[in-house]
Length: 218
Image (cartoon, rainbow, N blue to C red; front, side, top):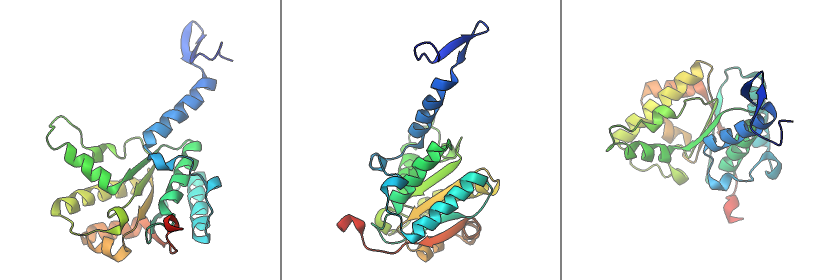
């Protein structure tokens, strides 16, 4: 429809984007900007055997996608290997297909990226860019990989608190939906931060415990 598939065509003596080519191109850019990990490839709702708790969560995310009204966001927690990250990948693919701007990140990777900017005064903070032009944030491995929280430094507490506060403010304004995934027991994660952050989290999140055997060992 646009002369042998070119990205632009002439309209009233001007070059304009072709809507038939630009749609898939924009979706491809959104998928790239989501920064999903390599192991997220092919992990969709169609390839995932949903347990009752994940069926309920799927309906909850779809309801938000349909209405886009501010509501509590799930914090999915439980032992490793119970399918939490797989579910998050599946939701990311579904939301991207529905044309939402999705951003995936892990807690530890954000802290590592932040540290990497310390010696570069011109580098912009990755945490400041985290929520820019984003409709849905998927924050995985909250509290550390495998649930091993260990010693949390004052810098980690302060930086994570600032990140959670930014997430809360954007969610509170009705501009963000958040899906958090953690292997850390909820009470351990919550008590790490001050009462102000705990209060914001209680208002923003709906804890969802996922039980079960380690699927990776099956």
